[in-house]
Amino acid sequence: MSDQGTGWSTDYYKLPEGAEELQDLIEYKNMNFAVANIFKAAYRLGNKDGVDEEYDLNKILWFAHRELARIRKSE
Image 1 (cartoon, rainbow, N blue to C red):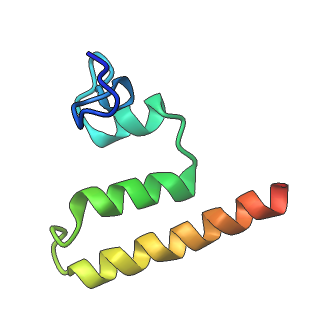
Image 2 (tube, one colour):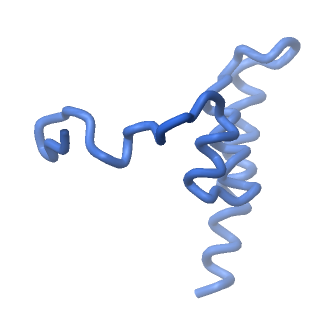
């Protein structure tokens, strides 16, 4: 069901058939290293042993800045 504008789920939020773990989603979306690390850190936010939310958020920011720099360099 694709219902743009209603707040309901759209096709790009649907899980691919057979997806069982994050790696399946990373491969399905062809995420590069930086984007995959952002995705993983956001998913586990504060739930990894010995790592708090601030650590994960800083990791997300670090990889996001790297990805922005890569995109800008390629333009």
